[in-house]
Length: 68
Figure 1 (cartoon, rainbow, N blue to C red):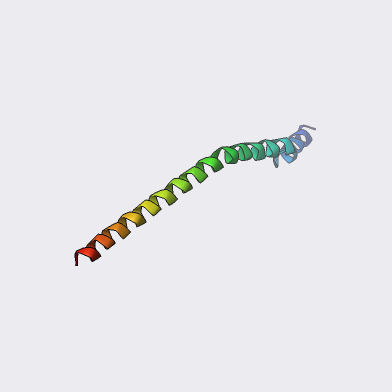
Figure 2 (cartoon, one colour):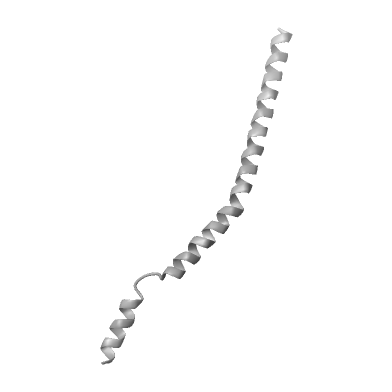
């Protein structure tokens, strides 16, 4: 009889329950909701810095061309 009890416990513990999966999905959603605005902010700052670098390069090139 104990062998049947052990077998039933093993067969029930093979996967995740629906509530466990829902909790994981909720946690991932919360983390995404927090991180997406930060990522967009960093993308915007990187774009601004790239534009400033391009302006500096253009200014240097224009100055070099006007000297010659």
